Image (cartoon, rainbow, N blue to C red; front, side, top):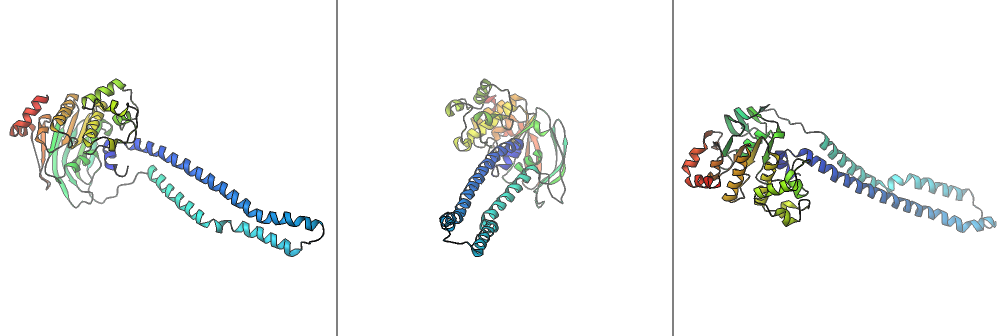
Length: 361
């Protein structure tokens, strides 16, 4: 989770991850309880063994005492009394190391539990981007800055993406393309201006490196949602649309658990992420170089399917071949400046991209 925290946040999968973490945590607690029980039984054994040191001599001496050959005096009585009291008072001392380790573990678990329950407040003395609900994605005088407010990535951007429309964000590496998407998602609020967007439940974000959760192929497709009435046939049809028609058969079914992040190539993971869009059918999709590991044919096929879906989307990409599947292109210059042009201008400047788009459509 720590390594994939941004991907999880983009997907809005916090509740799903919290539920899964609680399940793993319950197993941890159960195992810890077994350890406590084992240590308790061990203590019973060692305590009983310590008492044998007192009991066995008494059993040996008792016959001599009753025959009158031996007398237990005050010294013997004081000896036993002192041994018993000393043994009782020595419990904390002899177990001090174990108690210290137990307290340290308890404090760490308590801190972790509190962190799960209490959201961390964002502390900042700088300006904040204002977020408002809307049916479209609209930016007014938007300035995006890094969280430390030392670098301005975007200045005074005003544009709107209405339902059913799309925009392609292009620019050199480091120009702030991904940061722009983080601002739209609400992950970054350092800056000024306003962003209007639908409820996050109606938006789906696809990062460049898809997050592959622990679970079955079915749960991968439905992520971050947990409940769905989607049939196996519908899932098979979706896999076919993203050119993964043999995946379920290859792994042994929809309900097989595999280490997906290592089993699937990055390109297959990106196609699986597109399947989540086709199943969820969000109002808006945000794609951060979501097809960077795919060849142009597969990339165009996925965007053609996305365009048919009617979902509005914002894409970050470098290939001109993406232009035919968008209405506008937002160019970032890397110093905060920007420009918007119709996607047809990019297509006209790249005949090969236009030909490929026409072939796929």
